[in-house]
Amino acid sequence: EAGVAQSPRYKIIEKRQSVAFWCNPISGHATLYWYQQILGQGPKLLIQFQNNGVVDDSQLPKDRFSAERLKGVDSTLKIQPAKLEDSAVYLCASSRGGADPNYGYTFGSGTRLTVV
Amino acid sequence: SQKIEQNSEALNIQEGKTATLTCNYTNYSPAYLQWYRQDPGRGPVFLLLIRENEKEKRKERLKVTFDTTLKQSLFHITASQPADSATYLCALNNNDMRFGAGTRLTVKP
Image 1 (cartoon, helix red, strand yellow):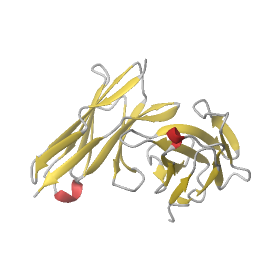
Image 2 (cartoon, chains in turn brown, purple):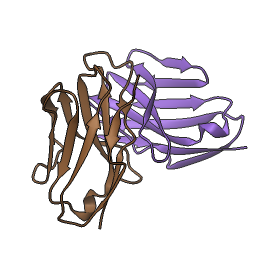
Image 3 (cartoon, each protein chain N blue to C red):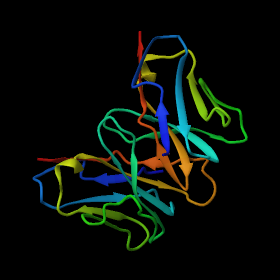
């Protein structure tokens, strides 16, 4: 089974620029998550999709962050304009969804964003 | 406010000893709790899940306990090896999964 694919692996941008991250989850996983992990902290949920619908985006800074999962498969997360405090690793994860958590979440390796 | 606290930022132990990591939480009532391993530059990897009605769960050299009265989970690695060196994260379900900051474990040969 292929893992969760994310690109790019690294990105350096200047503040006020825009950036986009891409994620392709495990085939058949209905639920997709974007997490932000700041150095030294645990992952923080930004947005959760179930198929192509948003389940939870309560912690997404909607004035600058947006995400979509148009066909219920891959997803993009965008930041526009970026701030210095957005420097972090952006992790995508997927799960089978439903009520069975036994398999946990499968994470990609993440995109390390540095805003200068 | 809701908090998930993992006992320490770093834990150093000698190879062959048992590592014990702690996860305490406040103002949550999770139906289950998960433990993940994270290596530098990689995403977390799921290890174990324990449900609120389970006291203990084992998988090979790993053991997890869950005390909903104390609001605490303990994660044990027995016969630890240098390859076990990583950051270990606990996560609680709260509609979505909420993660602690992790404990960085170093096992010295």
